[in-house]
Image 1 (tube, one colour):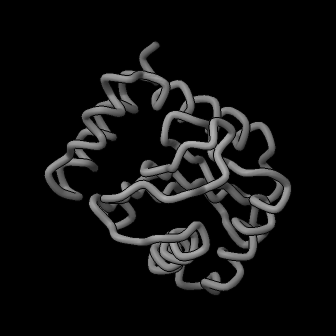
Image 2 (image 1 turned 30 degrees about the vertical axis):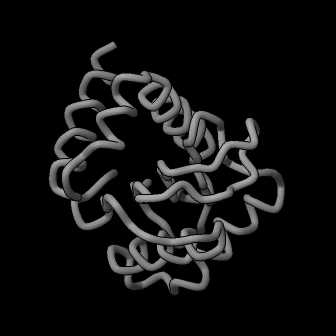
Length: 151
């Protein structure tokens, strides 16, 4: 679900809207058949229902799209935390966005659950925040996801 080109560390944005635009831009590069606007609209529509900021500096923006055929992730770590209306009112610096096919509700729920489980490990999120670059971040996430799947 995650590719190295959709994994970015130390990005610099200062607003919720701008980070979601960047996530949509990265997703569009991987899914060029889906307009960037449609991806952003799916993410923003979900945010209007309530913030996907789950606390601890983490947000899991997500959206369902008819034109997505397989689930995909975009993982971004912000150099400076961004106000994101998270449930604990803390700024967010770890963003794991999920795009799911519209008709795969169970996949959506299990993906959200696995990501939340992986990101609930404080030692792991500390390593995420201190990744030297996007490549190292991608390698760390791939190793971490294997550990979650093994549990």
